[in-house]
Structure formats: structure tokens, C-alpha cells
Image 1: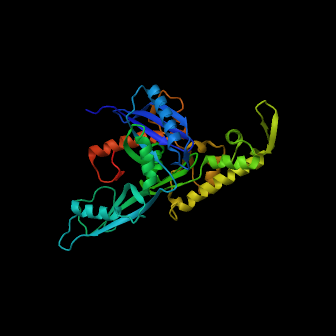
Image 2: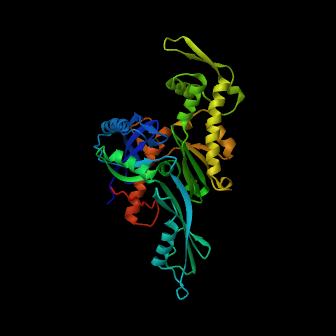
Length: 400
């Protein structure tokens, strides 16, 4: 008899650490039991640069998550990101011997091994092998072709890899917190489990997650992952641009960005000046609203254009559902309008209907990756039970 199961997602981000405890119910829905967050110190562009500082931040978030959930955390599903991680598509082709006409399991295994064998640089390590589709004599199949008649078998995979030492450093940091790692997921793959349902993937959907130090993306067409990657630019770069423009402290530049910024390009939203107050409430400085908005807009415009350029040629036209935005920076006013100007598709905020819990803020887009890790864990459990080949294709080399 099926039973509810508790999983924990850990996101080590540039601006925050998030530990989320979720219960997967028998009916497949997810209940959030607890959430712990901490300001991130020691992470740059999604990668750990100071072990001492970041371990203190993780410890703080863990304690908060345990207190709110009343669950003792011993293991986590970990998301990782960084500009060194990239995804590529590869096809494995196997032609059956002349005296054989029916596809057997060993024929499929041979094609799968060829598809997974992507030429990566020596310092890289595989993170995911994700099955996309099968073809028999050029005709596409969505399920295993074993038992079918044909001469040529093709298997398509999306293969994600990253620099081995950088991923190992992240793993080392978590293990030194006396935590086991149940599994590791590239951040946008986890976020997609929260943001995109089956129907959205089938019709075509692009997920863009804009965090503090990185912008992750994942493109699904006809239900399959066809592109993924990470651009090492995020919300903190916008804050730094404002800091350089105004000379304001970083914290105050961040506040102005959130409270006053608008990137839609609408002239009516860029009229007047913004008065910046000092700690005593006196006017410290003034900045034209048009200037502030243009600084923010140009940085986000550049970031979204980088995502656009990394997508396969002609793929934007195949997106039937639209573009889904998540991450803390996705809350910027006018971002939906700007994104629509670039991609020309419907724009949505990432959210999931089958999530419940006592935490009032769990649907905030900045928690999309952490919640996605719970969904990822749920699908991993199903994969273990059914033992298919290659849904997430976890080929993690470092063990538990």
C-alpha cells in the first residue's frame, strides 16, 4: 500500500539558501511542511567561493526548516547551477544485423549507450542523461520500441554536464554539514518540475529562472527537453549597475530596484524623479526614474537576449504554451512585457496547483527551485519503482 513520503530540497543560491521540507501524499499532491531560508554569503554566480561562510548560512536555514516542519533532516535533494553547466542533444543510431528484423533489448541498450556518449572536455562530468525520444526507420515513438520490427533504431538524449571539481566542492560542502545527498539536479530541471505540467511541455514551453547571480533556462518542445543551460548573470548584477550609477550602498540600491524599478519600456512609468532618503529621513539624493528604469531594463534585455541566442534555431516558433518566469528577479515590474517583446510568446509566472501547506509564502517565485526539488524527488521515486531507462538518467559518479 502506498504511503506518504517526506523529502527535503536544498538550494544554495547566490542571494539565499533555501531548505524546504515537503510531504508527497498518496494522491500525488505535495504539502509543504516547513521552510528555512538564510541570506547567502560565500556564493558568487551560483558557485561556492567561501566554505566557512556558506556552511554557516546552510546551518541557519536547516535549523529554521527543522523548527517549522518538526522534521529532523538527514538527507537532501540538492540543486546546483553555474555558468560551467551546459546541455547538448545527441542521437545514438544502431542498425540491426541483416539477419535480424525485430528490435531486442540489447539493440536498444546499444543505441542508448551511443547516444549518452557525448564528447565532453576532460574536466567535465555528466550530470544528467535525459531521454527525449525513439525512432524506428525514421518514425518517432514515445515509448520503448523493443519488440517492434525495423532496421534502423535511433535514440535521442539531452546530456547535461559540468566541471567536475566545482560540482564536487558543492557536494563536499553539504556533506560536511553531516547531510546525505539523495540526488543532485541541475536547477532548471528541478524548477521545471514545479513550473511546467505535462500539457505545457507537450505544447512547448520555455522556463527562465532569474536568480541573484544566475539565469537558468530549460526549453521543452513536444514534451521533450531540447535545450538547457545557465548564464552567470542575475539580479545582483542589476543592483550593482544601480550602485555604480548612483554611488549608493549596495543594500539601498537593492531596495530602490525592487520598490521603484520598471522594465516595461512604457514612457508613462518613467516620469519624474525618485527621492532617496538617508537614515534620518532627509533627502539624500535624487535620480530620474527614466534613468533608473533604463539601467535595469538594459541589463535584463541583455540577459534575455543571451537566452534567446542559446536556443536552437527556429525553436521559438514552436513554443505553443509560452514562456514561464521564476526566480526572485522575475518579480520585477514590467518584466513580462519585456520578455514578450523579445520572445513574442505568452508570458506566465511559474506556479503549481497541487501544492499546499502552512507556509504563506511558498508560492513566491523565488522558492520555485526548492519546491521543484520535491517534485523531482517524487518522480525519482516513481522511476525507481518502475525502473525505466533514462527519465532523469542520473549518472552521478560521486556516490552518496
